[in-house]
Amino acid sequence: MTAALSPEQTEAYWRDGYVNRLVALSPDEAQAQLAAFEAIEAEAVAAHGGEWKQRDYRPWEHADHPFREWIDGLVRHPRVLDFVESILGPDILIRNADVFVKNPGIRRGINWHVDTAEKGPDADKLLTVWLGLTESTDENGGLHYAATSHRQIMPDAPKDKFNLTLSPTAVAALDRSQEVINVMEAGMMSMHHFSLVHASGPNRTPRRRVGFVGRYMAPAIRQATAESGVATLLRGRDTFGHFALKDRFPMTWTM
View 1 (cartoon, rainbow, N blue to C red):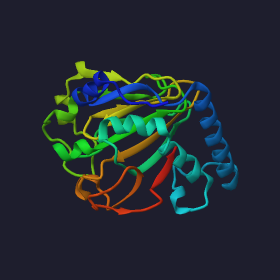
View 2: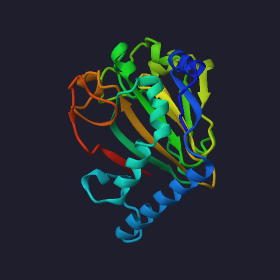
View 3: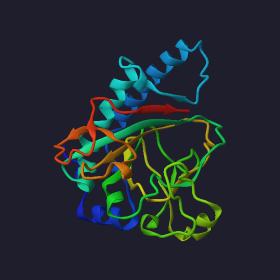
């Protein structure tokens, strides 16, 4: 089964800065992936004395950690890569990947921000995949997109990687009529441009929200834009040599 975007979906991505409701996993596959993650999570919690004491856990520091094999399978899932290829082309790198968990009653959200301060053609070579292992809604803290903001020049916009959150001045300049809630069922994925402004809210439901995030790149991108000198080749070839290619990539899970 191939999962290429239609011409209309590809056009929508470049126009709006995102495309969503792409079926990457069947409901059964999504449930199986969630169960596998929660088994790994339960083992890690038990190893920490039965209580989670860290918001972030960095399994790339542990070469034999089972989380590595699990997330590597999602990063390389053929349907995920087919969708990514529709935007980036046949040669695909991964910079890093994360799993984000919002447990019930978590009040914190993430303010309006971008994934890179870079504007221009080089930023077009980066995209973020968001794949839901549970459903994603406004009530459980799903993403909000400011459609078309990836092409907007905002006053007081983020200028470097150290602070990608929008200032009040930049937020005020957003066209809020273009705000879109990324509502998806479990197993669906979205892709958004690194320069697209987005945010998420708290989880106001009794169920946790779990999502996989992968940050993919085309090999032609410059290190300065990628904010990394290393990457992992997932598909095709790297004929540019901008990055030191590694078998392992940074990964986290965050609660």
